[in-house]
Length: 186
Image (cartoon, rainbow, N blue to C red; front, side, top):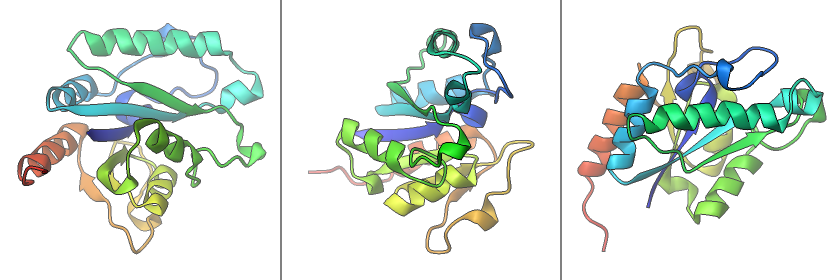
C-alpha cells in the first residue's frame, strides 16, 4: 500500500484564521484536488492531518468542523479525488499535548490505523513542526513551499532532509515518478 499524509491547512485547503464557521470557510489550495486525484489513480491512499485548537478553546464545535470537511470532500469528489481519513488535534497550544505539533502521537495513530511503517509513508507539509514530527518517526519528508508559508529548511532535523517542491503538483509528480522507478515488490 502507498500512503501519503498531507497537512490539510496550506497544502489541501487555505488556512482559516480564528473561528471556523462551516462549509463556507472551505477554500482549496490551487491544484490540490487534481494532485490528490492523480495520487489516488496511481493507487495511493491519502490521509489529512490538521490542528484544530479552536475546538479545545470552544470557538467552534464538531458540527462546524464536520460541515467544513463535508464541503472539502464534495469539492475533491468533483475531480475524482478521495481522502481516506482526516486526523486532527483538538487541543489548544497551552494543553501541551503530544498529538501533532512537533510531537508524533497523531502520526503514530495513522500508521497504526493503516498498518504502515513510517519509512514507507510520504508526509507532505508546509510546516516545520509536522515535518519534525514525521522525521522523528523516520517518514519520507516532502516540503511544499507555499506563498506566505514558514521557512522550513532551517527547522528540520539535520539528520533528515525533506524533498523540496515548489508546488503540490511538483510534489505529486515526484512521488509518481519515484514509485514508477521502483522495482516491483515480491
